Length: 443
Image (cartoon, rainbow, N blue to C red; front, side, top):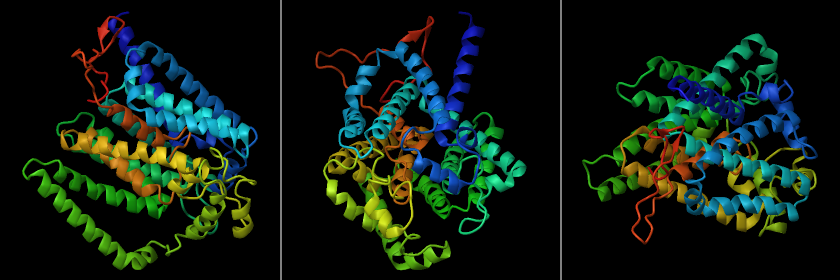
């Protein structure tokens, strides 16, 4: 294969990856689901218990199949990643086995298979791209999603802007709902802010355009949670940079951050009501606490193993809750709660092991590196920690944020030299060329 052919194939793969990331981000929702208001699209998600959405299934199956083909040429590095992330595999396996006790076995099994394929796609991303490359590809996907959303708002305002109370005037763009648009754009703002920090970086127009588009669409989404999350994470960039600095001893840096954290907790406690009122919320988080109370009561009926993956918020699984709130909802608006409701204490315990392993690995990478990838890993874990309090994307099949969490775990898999003293496995080569630009897990 000539250099030109190799260059062409590699760039075609990058285009495929950007399109795949756009699908996982939900940026192509109007083309994969009925093109209508976000509320109606949310109802579609809740109602698709029997057969699911055929177009979305076809799109994601195509993506995962192509990813699997690439993984077949990377078999040498797979065993190390598998062994180093057994808890993630066990959590995914529990979701599959939960079809045995699910309220809707067929739907649970179908969605759990999709979750397994999403996990496989995370392996593909880690094996084929460096952390820096992937960060840029995610940036491209979110920037194109923001641009597409802006175009659709201009061409089809009645279908891409929420009409009437309570969400009237909020933009949903091509993402199907203002909250998803806001969440993805908050992630985009963080990514482009990190890319802009690189001195002498190439394609400055790309970072400025991406930051501007994502920030504008974030503002127009009117998602208060996304606004607050973006602001907190932008401030955390400077806090994390202080943490990784070498001018102070680690004990003094950690102690200073603990004091800062305590001060922030006290400030939130003192000004919580005022702050919530300022963003149009109250102490019930727009009625979420009522839903959580009823859901916990219902969940105690199957507390150890849960109702089955993606089976709780169904007519039968959440009948106790629906009878008391007089409404059908697709999730509990709390990622941690939903993991417990679906997989019980066993699944929630595995999830906590996975999540805190990710935080530990991200922190270790942060303090021993000086690149933007190290910052992004930790920011992503903080983003997940905060956002999951009011949104569901943890353990979600075909979802960008959960995919990136898995990617973080896989990228940061520790290197372990065998007891015999053998050196770590060298990176393989493809088509006669060393894969110097490809990541080695643990770097």
